[in-house]
Image 1 (cartoon, rainbow, N blue to C red):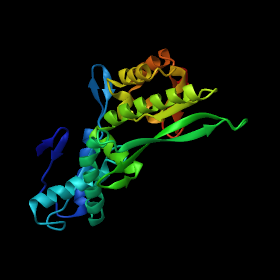
Image 2 (cartoon, helix red, strand yellow):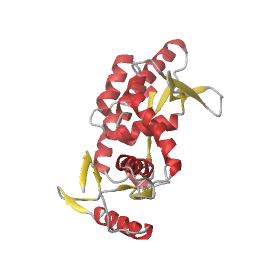
Image 3 (cartoon, one colour):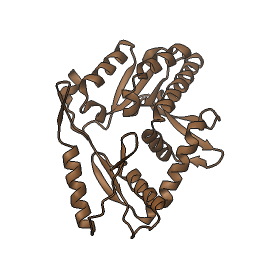
Length: 268
């Protein structure tokens, strides 16, 4: 066992001779890691993602073998909860593409490659535009138009989503402030907030800064969060929600009912 980086560990297992044994071992590891433990009086548990490369079936080169395991790990991380995946050839090209996106993404904002598109939302009774959803777009000088699902996924996994999300909020607020000056009826702007961004310690300050710089009325900013934020770390999420309410920022809940929260949570 060796620590590769951060919370990433490498394990070399020589006693296993077939995939069935490997699957059983992964199940045992996931079960052990997932056992709840006490942390400051609270029961918490961990999730685990495992990427597997097999010697000599996948490759005989040590560096390539590690790279293959990394590729399988990358794909495993896309699955919610604890899981494991074996490397296969189809992963290689996709992971290479995502790795390249990860290399270029941190420079995209400063290079002026990022922009926001706005999807209008109309009042069904009058047909009037009442809100617009801000959607990030990336026109890379090297890669061309990068699909949002791809770069958002990479941003989430790399942690860049916090920096990207901060930029989106600031740009969206500036746009909405401009609309308020140009239209007789105010148009709110809606911004999707990722779980990682929402839980970041600087999130509330980011929202406050965006409103202050743009001079946008807080009521014209809507932050869209997912139900997953309401599951597990209740106290932290509630504290952030209450801070936003005090700022008079609107909140909307996406995908409610797909997870384990309930309507009772909304009354807290």
